[in-house]
Structures are given as structure tokens and as C-alpha cells.
Length: 46
Length: 261
Image 1 (cartoon, each protein chain N blue to C red):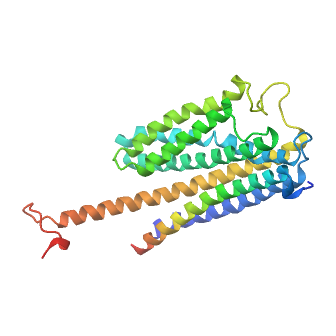
Image 2 (cartoon, rainbow over the protein chains, first blue to last red; image 1 turned 30 degrees about the vertical axis):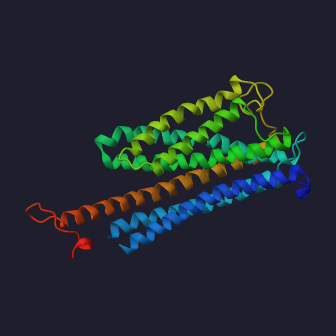
Image 3 (tube, chains in turn green, purple; image 1 turned 120 degrees about the vertical axis):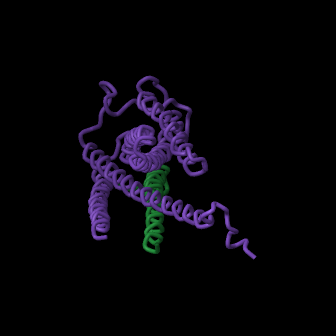
């Protein structure tokens, strides 16, 4: 692929789409992970 | 003690192996989509959004049925087998959240793609509107689960999920029944539909990758929810024991420690 950079709407929107995928999936994963760690700590404490 | 720790450790190892495999497949899918697959002749590089948009759209219509089946199981078991009902409930909330994740990606990538190709961010087209409705129904489901304080929250959620499941076939068939802005189906859409052979590897790797990721995140979320349920039950038990401690044998309530002078 020849990437034209962020100067064209084509390039920008392709990057934004990939960033959105990473942000939404990554954000959800991190929130589940934090919850898991919190529950694990309280499990160990009790 | 050994018996309860062992399955947890096995689950953790299985989860980590599955996650490692998923990351490998995600990397292959990314490489295929960005570097190997040919550039679309009509759309240029922005056409590569296809490899995230379509798998998310397809999986966004699969996970609602996991939620639907789990909700039906919850409604069936809630009077008969409370433990099975709790497991079904954990599956239902996890599947609802994963549905929102996938439909959100589908909506956002679709808007970015639409702006570049159609010149507009949004139109009240049958497919777009029905998918937005599905997203809203699952957001409503999650909000109800989070904010409702009644003892019937899970039952209310299960009923909302039945309505949400009805919207899924409407989303699927919308581009077959109505010819509006959204393109006709890529698969099974008639003589002009289908992908070029050179695009199949990137598409298949990406659908496999996002399916594996979806299964991983669903299983992870279910395990967190089950742990939360155990925590809630333990808290309820502690509170009940505390209440019982406040009563003497004659049934008279003793002053609470904080109020005692």
C-alpha cells in the first residue's frame, strides 16, 4: 500500500478508523481488566 | 483449597494462551488488510476500512443472540435453579456489552467511511437507522442493569433483550428489503455481489481475528461478572449476619454500635 499520509481525507479517515477500533476495543478490555484486578485484590484480602 | 485454586489457574492459563493466539491472528489480519490486500480501484485506501467495518457489523449481529439465549435461560431458571440463573445472567450482561462494543465500531467506522466515499457522515437510511436502534437498545439494557436498584433488574434486562433480538433480523434484512444509501449486501446479495478473490484472505483473517477477540473478551467479562456475583453474595451474607447480631434471643433489637451512648 502507498500511504498518502494525513494530508488527504482518505488517509486521515483510514487512520481514524483504525484508531477508533483500537480505542473502543482497547478501552473496553482495560475497563474489564481493571475490574478483574479490583475484585481479585478484594478476594485476596477477604 | 487445592480443588478451588486449580480450576482458576487452568482458566487463567487457557485465557492467556487464547489471548496470545488472538494477538497473532490480529497482527496477521492487520498486515493483510493494510499491506497485502490490493487497493480498491474505486475508493482508494479508505476502502480498507471494509476489513474492520464488515467483521464488526457481522459480529455485532451475532453477540445479541448470545445475550438473547442467555436472557431466555435466565427467565427459565430464575425460579427453578438460582445458580444456573446467575450464570445465565453473567452471560447476558457480558454479551450485551460486547454487542455495544462491536456495533459502536461498526457505526464509527461506517461514518468515517461514509464521509470519505459518500460525502456525508450520516443519513437516515434503513440499515444505518436500524443498527443505531440496536445500539440504543443495548445501551438502554446496560443502563437499566447498572442504574436500576430494584430486585427485578435482571428480569427487566432479560425482557429488553427480547425486544433487542427482534431488531437483529431487521438490521440484517434492511439492505435486502430497502435499496437506499447503504450498499447492497457483499455476500449473498445477487449477481453483482461478492468480493474479489484477492480480498478474501484479508477479510477472512480479520473476521477470524475479531471473532477470537470477541470470544476472549466475552469469556473474560463473564468471569469478572461471576466474581462480582460471589462478592455481592458475600456482602449480602455479611450484612445479614450483622443484622442478626443486632437482635438478641428475645427478638428485641439492640442499639447499633454507632448510636450507642
